[in-house]
Length: 390
Image (cartoon, rainbow, N blue to C red):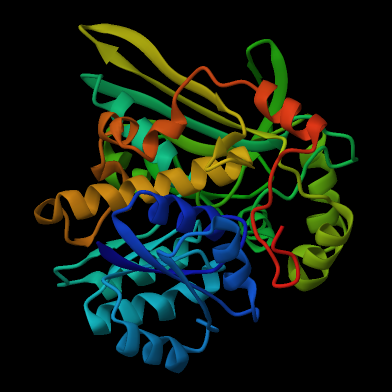
């Protein structure tokens, strides 16, 4: 069994730890800065292979002491993006594999520099976007003789929006604000450029339903670097329900809250609820030449909440956790194939979908199961506090 240190027992870390531990091939050291948080998750899973720790991983000395004492073989960061550089530095110092979920461009570049010359894997951006969408795009790209355009669109949305933002906080609030507020990478006329977030607004229709999409930061991952000299245009946009972008422009630009992100975070977390009843939309379109003809291929999938180990998990929890767990699994099953800084597009889509964790991305899901379980009050508990062992 492999000993894995999972940092962060939040929305995604809770399922990462469960998937890895339930597989029988990983022992999980689950750590969180909030006292008792990791223990609540461990109690919810009820697995001896998850050992909880109260650990503030933003304290580099405390993280170093933990690694020295408990000797994990890999660290998985489910922490906010701004914590990850220090975690990667500890991983490099002690010879650990490193995986994270960051969408932040600057953090990824720092991890790349830390990984130089290492025989261990440093794989940032292992989530949904960047992450799985990059793997999908790479697969479609390999089908073409010559490329013209690559469009990537991803959204995690409430199934039943009923607030002015038409949105629910399905993952990290810091991550949402970061991708809405930072410059975005794109390829325009064959050149890499920075484009503004919340711009490039477009309408998109999937299965007869209308959505909007707009520029957000980080979702392109390293694809622009890998294929930028082969395409005319390449961009990433986030999918939302129509009207969301207008409201976020008011908050972030009109009210200048992009410059006061702590206030914006408090506003969103006090006003926008979480939900288990969401849907993740993954859309990739690649245009180019095949056999001398201009053609387009698409990957379109909707992933709904799923039951794992007898409990209901949201679609964003499932897709993000399944993505990074499948990457971890592939690295440990083929250790000679990967080392140093590893881009997401180095993994093949067929390998991900055939993996025991990646199979959660299978087509054909629906919202029926989540609707029934919510109506019956049978969604289960993702964490159990010390005072409630029921």
